[in-house]
Image 1 (cartoon, each protein chain N blue to C red):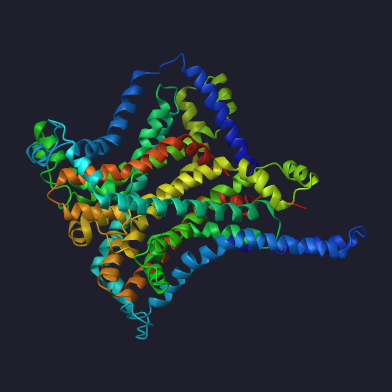
Image 2: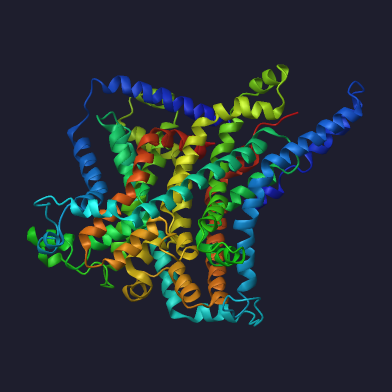
Length: 337
Length: 294
């Protein structure tokens, strides 16, 4: 992202007035007035959004970097400067390293479990079947309801005395009944199932939108050439779905690294680490906010941010580059003059 | 830019062509089988919550995965009769509606500048909002809480609404810019010949023409704000100020033995987002097509 910004043509508007001077027809003062008016409009229209964005998104992130160097309980101005001590503690804490491992596992498994399934479901739902629009609404339902509701509902269902184990027993599969939430051997898989259930609707809708963006002519041409359904999907849909797949994977990766709500709601701050589902974000809330160590909590936030940013930039550099290079430099509108 | 309009057009023409042909064909049974299984998996847990709310606690204890027998309405009626539910429902409404209105309005104005004005910082402005996608709330939550605390807005809905607006801006701007850029230049020229200023063009032409994008982003922001958990968790600490997600969690820990009531409370709190979504569902696919491709 950042390198495409620096590569942009700078100060393109400067050329406007100088070229205007050459045309003797338009008086200079009119042009200057129009120029001021334009700047005024730009400031009025974009100012509020930029101020809000800088104040509540960018500023806090920089403050996190500052607070992260202090041992601080959150009252008054931080004074107890400890340098990199917080960071040393974080990386030597087995709990944090466990959480980081869990994040990595969730990241990889989300891509592996949801990606192929989402493409398959999108292909399925793109066919001429009755009730297609109803199916589309229903598949999106888990995405629309909140994490708290998902967590509460699944939490009750998966209790040891809950509906799932009862259902398994009544079907004669009682041997498979398990303590889905507290058993450290299965808990992370339980989490993966819930995550996939919650977020696959979004992936499917994205893929559907991507498939519908593929020009119809390509399919007609392939059909005329006698290509089978699977050949068409393999050689036309999949390659042209590439940009959508890469954007989805990017969103999924960022989401996996920031995962908090579901884990915190179902497992809580203590069970999460014993059941092996804690994430960097639950570690941050537990050690920072709940323990009252705001300096330390901010340092954890910085670590999460740097890890996310490093992975995001790497991904962008090697995977998304083809797709976004044009998007950032050209998308913001047509060239006026 | 023009690509967004293009994909929009092909999407609609494709939909039209499939609709006309779907009247005749039914497709293969396997397709229906897979689709049915998929849909069952998607909605079974939701049905479990809704139907569970119609059972009594003894029914749930004796037979956790059973059907209501008889159907019990008292769980739902007692939640609907409680002042706390409506209080928290109202808080969620205030938070979601004002976040949506302000975020979409601010993003529309900024997107108009990015899409239709030619000036030095234009691309930098777009990149600034695009970079915002990398700053999820999880990372900023601790300093954000401290900032809100210093502004004296803890335990105040405004302390939730302002950051929500700011964090909704990147996605909204990214989706709206292609919509605004796709409005033909001829329309703007025609408007200026008719004597409209650029601002007049914004209010008379851009607002109506960008309505599909505005609705798409509006739904996404509304649902995000309605479902928000982490920010209210940090900012609000009095149950009278809770939004529904916090309310659900508080209710389920206070009534941990009253499973049926928890299920009723939970299913009532998901209704608004579901209704809102199902009304505008068609817009989401169309809007995302423009965003992904644009």
